[in-house]
Image (tube, rainbow, N blue to C red):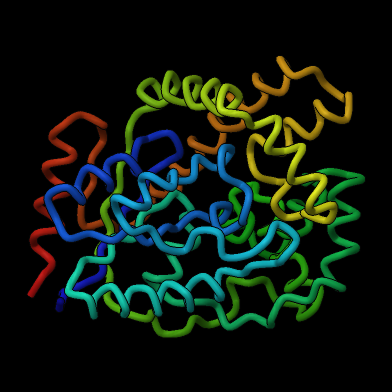
Length: 302
């Protein structure tokens, strides 16, 4: 299949974007290319709302379960994998629909990658220690002195913050000062921008479902199998449950913190996607949004 542009669908957590993709696949020859920085990790299933095996059997999903929680995984690696998957899906005469809430991944497909040095875990290690001892604020202040734009781009994600500071301390230049590579292909972006009033009950329901489906057991299992899963422990749900398992908070507090953290993350995602130049915007989760997205997808084949 030949497309005028590769479709990207961006939306905040708990917005139902994965269900929407499954619904669209009933009518269109879609394969889902997942743009989620935590669903790349094996074993992080319940807490990341990873598509079930039954859903994956019904509609092909790609870029899930790529590495163990102990392995580093960069946006450059994700872009390379996405390019290969998109080419393969097109070769099968189907539509690769890139779906996710990790704006940094989607942005990399739109504008390319910064030509920054490769990540160096040895240089990141002392920055992680500073983060663990003093929190994010001192690190954000240091980065903001050189580039407020890079602080905003990190979206309060510790992994991105540490990476940006590694680049700054290593080169004397913030990430924004590095030129970008050429994008791998033309893209067309659609974004869902529901209100927080719409998202709040969905966020609460999502958190309740995670605990009912066995999030606590999943975290216990991951901690025993992967004692050095530093990056993955920053994922919402895993961090809070780990604190409860360590006795620092009780499980009811952990559940409430998951709701609060998910709400804050959704707000940041809405801000991010709201600033992007999109070919289609829908500000509600109602049925007309699905119809508009289907029409957008149908406009892309040449």
